[in-house]
Amino acid sequence: MLLSNYSKLTLEAGTDEAGRGCLAGPVTAAAVILPENCLIEKLNDSKKLSELTRDRLKPIIEELALSYKVIHLEPEIIDEINILNASIKAMQHCITGLSPVPEYIIVDGNRFKPVNDIPYSCIVKGDSKYLSIAAASVLAKTYRDEYMNQIHEEFPMYNWKQNKGYPTVEHREAIQKYGITKYHRKSFRLLPEQLKLDL
Image 1: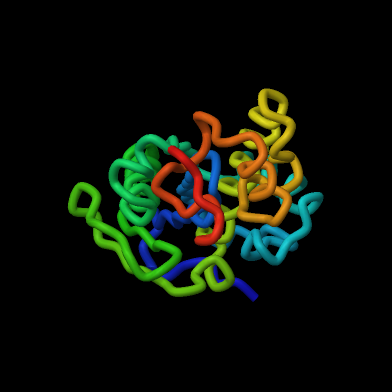
Image 2: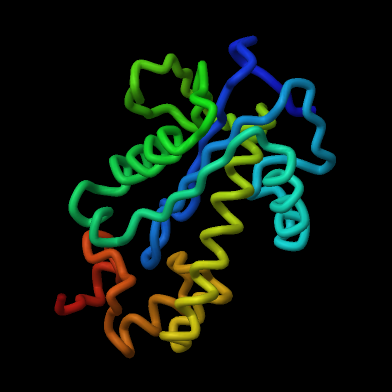
């Protein structure tokens, strides 16, 4: 059973990201403020839900939320500032895009940086403990999957529609065969050590 609130303040935003471990595509963050005593059936950490359930929950979350924001941060920024900083930056952008302004922020994970002096707490596995973080995890995941499905049409040989940019054997074999695209993260180890790639 997910908890509705951590801080006991009314306007509490949950935030989470998707795509941190991918070789290609953006890191996508979402932030959500849910109304008090909000109940969303089947809502959980997005990784524990089927694609069908996530897709069904997305419009429900968007309809019930007092406010939500989703941001994609592109591979160039990830390569420039590293994936941890890019994840935090994406979540910060989401928070600043919320209206009303949250009184408190709860973040999935153990790292964050302050946003406009709003108090916050980092919660490890927060997406399986608090409704607003779970809602943010579902939005981040569904929006990122949609993005990967779109760019799959441009470069179908990497099968991003299936692997969403994660380092599957198939994805790595395609990188070895076809090289990299503008959507690949050059700062990541795109191939195992024994297979070098000329960047």
